[in-house]
Image (cartoon, rainbow, N blue to C red; front, side, top):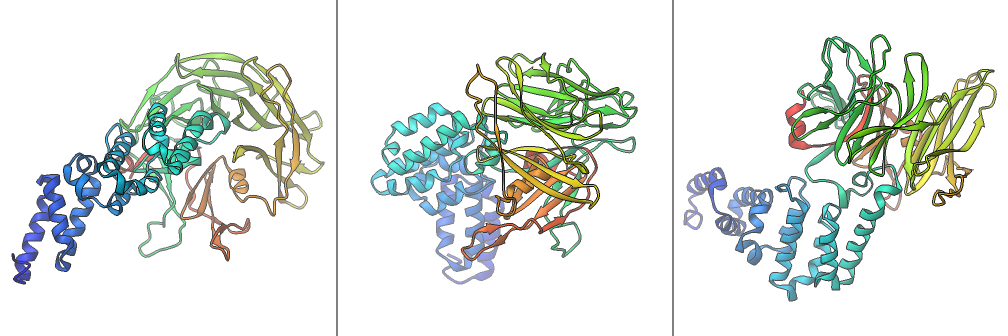
Length: 514
């Protein structure tokens, strides 16, 4: 009434009051208030307030009759596109059920929106049985919907074992959990402090600055690794791996270069580390790989030098077992899981101190190591950073070879092809094909600097040791992103330490950051 009589002050008072008490108003009444406010320009702020409230209260909203009757497809698409949409433990399954209920309420008219809505659901987080039911349902008779669901089912069935990078990073549209942030996490401590840090790729903290240099933020409230202070004063060289959203930390070395066998897992929702059975062999500076239900610890260093023993931890039985060894004193190692095998590379010096690059493949069913390549470096050439990476289900070996006379580094990229990994009775073999690095996919340079990388706003960020770098994206004439290997920008230095790309819930991160 105040609105129709143009009592602006009364309108403002009423609108402010409704905005303040909206949490106590029923969802059906919220829909009614939103509908009325949307039709009056003077109530634009009230309309926006209730619209955001309905989006953030999606679970309760989806249970109401008003949602089924009055929600537009645009409102539903906005809800599904909101990273902070309110969900509980069943998350995407509830969201999918709400979409199906909305469509079925008036199927004859709304079915044309089914494909667009399905594209906004994180189908990779839905159990396979529920996806199969979707294929067999009325929605599955829409060809575009059926193709999308079958594609995701194929990825869920085979994707985790065909590449080293998690599906949530390779296909965030389908597999990334909502309301999360992926960030570089470093763990190492010294006597003056033991807090972990994470890299925020946004601007630095200077007011008005738009440098995109980023900043390392101290996770001062993140629970420390469960090592007593009298036991560890300085800690480095542990290995980190993320499996099913959980962070595992193993090994490491203390101030007198004594290796540790500790093994523990971090629960970010509770901000707690839990001790797990220790490794059978203490080690530091070693690659750790998740592969077919196990976590493999490969070689590393002990107090008297390089160590080549392998052991694995069963995620089901919660036990470590020794798993042979590769018999070579390798350093600067990198390892990935690829097509049923674990591929390992590293460098080794011969009696003449000439560096040699070696690539091995482990058949976990035998278990036997097969040599894929032994490549001595040319005289005067050294390389301390060979990296194995998987991109688009292909395996690459990337190295930066340093000319000791010219003091320059030259990238060397090879695709590892013709792998007979499917034949358990045969020795693994491979062909190494040189790649033209000038025209090659730019992501290869990113992952060559470090196995840890992420993207934001088209730019690519990498982290290695205490350094971080950003590769700026540009647009070509067609609007596609492209990268130039010369466009690297140095970012803020962080502490030294082991780095892993870890996904935090935004709310959880805010409780442990400085």
